[in-house]
Length: 158
Ligand code: CUA
Image 1 (cartoon, rainbow, N blue to C red):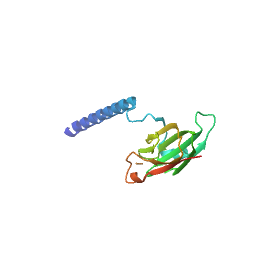
Image 2 (cartoon, rainbow, N blue to C red; image 1 turned 180 degrees about the vertical axis):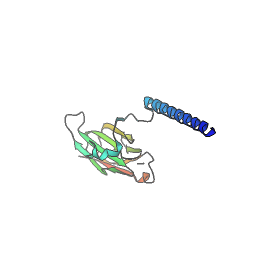
Image 3 (cartoon, rainbow, N blue to C red; image 1 turned 135 degrees about the vertical axis):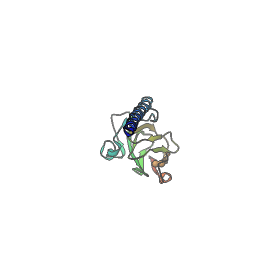
Image 4 (cartoon, rainbow, N blue to C red; image 1 turned 45 degrees about the vertical axis):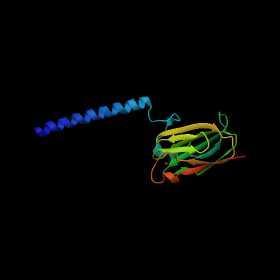
């Protein structure tokens, strides 16, 4: 009989915890607390390689849009695809990035580009880089043992 009572107690406790958890999750989702403003679209992060535009990463010339180039980037522990990106100086570029595993950063040194990449979300940022040069792209979110080695390069050329 005692066992039965305890079982009931734990069942009630378990259901209660679940409700509290769902409430907290719901409130967090409502406030959109943890998601950066650059991440608006969602994606199945386990299938990133198969889904557009990430099934074709790299730099693409586009037409009929408010920007001239799209730069599609996939981050994963501990590298970016592609490791080198090249865009013409003065071009209006939309960066579209996501992660295949954990949270990574996408910060281009000496520019205003600094995105947080979260699993399940697509981060986007439109900008124009007006100065030629090699710009180091770094991960600024701690993502594991290879974090410090996680980088790539943006080349802004004539
Ligand atoms: Cu990726 Cu730190």
